Amino acid sequence: MVMSVSSADELNCVLCHKYKGLSRIDDKGDFRLYYINEQLFESSPHSKNSCLDCHEGIKEVPHKNVKEVDCSTECHMTEPSSDTKFSHDSVKDALARSVHSKYDENGNLKDYPEDYPTCKDCHEQPVYRPLNKDVSSKERDIARCKTCHSSGDFAKDMYKHMSTRLHKFRSPKENINVCAKCHADKEFNRRHKLDDVVASYNETFHGKLIQLGSEKAPDCIDCHVVRGENAHLIEAQDVETSAVYKNNKARTCRGSGCHEKATDNIAGFQTHVTYEAEKYPLQFYMLAFFRIVLTVVLYAFLLIVFLELLRRLFPHATIPSVIKKRKEK
Amino acid sequence: MDKRPHILVLNKKRYFQKFTVHQRVQSIIQIVSVIVLALTGLPLRYAEYDWAKVLYAFFGGPDVTPNIHRAAGTILVSVFIYHTIYWMIKFYKNHICFLIDMKTLTVKNIIKEFLSQAMIMDKDDFKSIADHFKYILYISNKPAQYGRIMWKDKFEYYAQYWGITVIGLAGLALWWRDEVSHILPGIVFNAAYIMHSYEALLAVLFLFFIHWYHEYYSPEKFPIPTGFFSGYVSESQMIHEHYARYVKLMTEAGLESEIKPHH
Image (cartoon, rainbow over all chains, first blue to last red; front, side, top):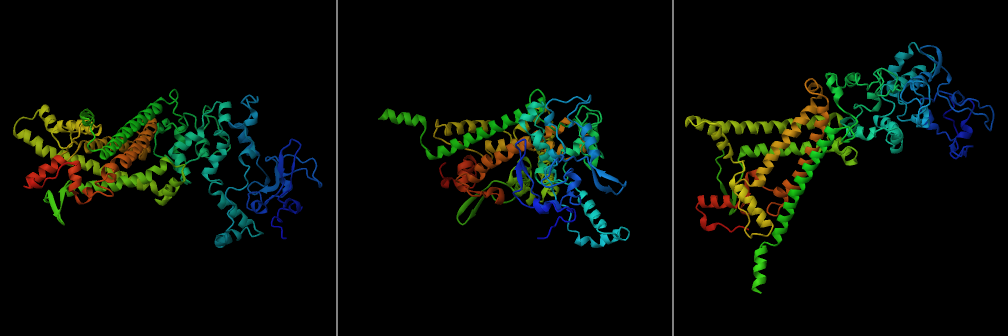
């Protein structure tokens, strides 16, 4: 059997980890699967990393003293623009400053700290859209890069990387699903006193267009991250630098070519409407009005239609004539 | 303008004129645009269902379908405005000018002339509503007799004025949201959203269950009525729905002896 992961798998980890049943129950009683799907790994962003880059501390078989994967570790890869070791440390920093940090601004643990996400809570699925692998039709374009970057597959790999990153790595639908894992959870929302923002988002035109397959309509990140900022820096709406802070909202709506011509008034649109009478009186009463009109008009006319059809079956059965006939008998 | 006869005899059957060419053209444009609006709008309301995704993709998906919806909406509203302006000009020529000529142009007289218009509910309509309810509630054995336009037609006509105004204005605000934000606060879009969505649902349900029952499903007309297309309706439909006008047209044509009883 030929090992397809061989480029990164110098230590031949796949020799064992290719078996689908490779698993055990760990000390905490959790089921752990150690199987590696080579095809998935090949098309993942980490396909050029060696296993030990992330899984530090493995020295023997069976593995002992294995450290938990820490995404902010410096990889054994060099970041080509700065010649420093590659690391996701900046993401960790952005996350720490975001509403999703389990520490508050004074450094104290928030309530229910276990609810706050770490890297793998949002990034657990390895491949949302496979890496742009089919570059055969782009050989001519890549040849231009190769004029200077001639050694090995660098030009080709860079091209794949760039062309994949030109669109969202996950579809908007999947982005929403990631947020929905927590934010659509009733118990979670009750614990943190939040509304079901996913349900209310799905009610908006933005949400509906995405459900119907749009790639252009905004998902959660498009509105909740300041344009040009790190996507992990999502801030609460009462933080002054937040994309959804009351003074910044209109700028967010105008961003990325969406509502370019809109004035600040557009910020008055309420996105996450729950139709509760106290919080959203206008929407609550309008909804009630239209529901009542709809019900009354429809049922009134349906009743008339029903009575008309019934009457066709008994064309001569008026009540006075029935009474008259009884009397005659 | 339509010089065709009120009673048309084809294959020894009588057909009675209900609409002129001008009215039929308006009505067919309306029918087509409303159906397109419903088919391109409902999937948005019910986006979470699989059928909605299929239907939306059929019309071209999120990049194309909204434009079809807007085009159909523009056509519907244009016909609606044309219809209103046409009526206004006619009303001015036939009634206001008459009042000016007679030197009796007062607000009271204008209202009086307005109330005498064909589409306005009059005494006869209230009487026929009462007759109709007496009939369907088994109080009387005599069905209500209607002229050319019955009270249900008039109700639907008013419903169009209410519906197209509400849905049209809301739709316009949602379409030109960036421009509307220059003159109105953002909460308008929340209101427009509810107005458009719920009033359109009412319109679609009403059309499907009530209007189509009156015009398509009812025994005299099933499966498809001829009125909106050829302008003429069959004798049995005429007798059932417009008996008063039936008697009037037959009498005018000198066919009193052939008038059939109301059924």
